[in-house]
Image (cartoon, rainbow, N blue to C red; front, side, top):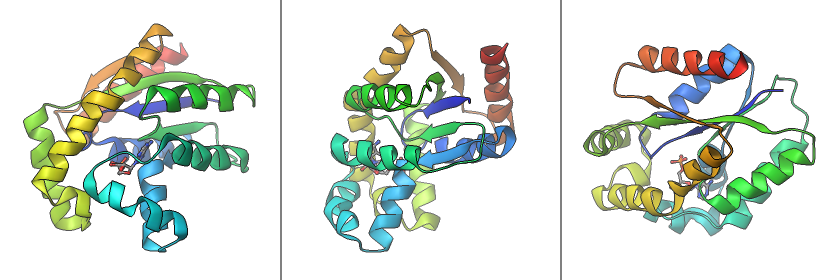
Length: 192
Ligand code: AMP
């Protein structure tokens, strides 16, 4: 099993690259953002509970996303591992993920951070908002808040993996294929 975390600020391109990695390496793609948006679309009790937080660019409580991921990890997957996209977003979540994986004799092989300059992030998110219809992509104040929340609450997660010698960073200022090539080279390095 090969489990990897794809990390980076909102708008860094995690969803796009994670989908490509899932296809290339036969991994199960777990995106907490996608799961939560699905709950909102279904207007489920959980969806209703998290809507205001997501629309405002705040994080959903740790316990909520840890439980969601725990359920996904328990269900059967016939792939070669997991790619986590948008999770963990706090050190608390990272610790919980390590524990849940250890319970199944699994671990994270590496975290790869996608690096994009901040003004480019804002431009990409505004553009995405035009087609995605995501409330949190369409409002400049919410976008700025998401980047602030990332810098304050999420960025320390990279340090958590760095301390375990499980962190790498690649630039995502180039094209989708250029970035994917950098990620593939990193995965080859991890696996060699
Ligand atoms: P994303 O699609 O990953 O940008 O996530 C969209 C929104 O969902 C975030 O701005 C948060 O409000 C919420 N969310 C997604 N993943 C998490 C997480 N791991 N922890 C807390 N909130 C999350």
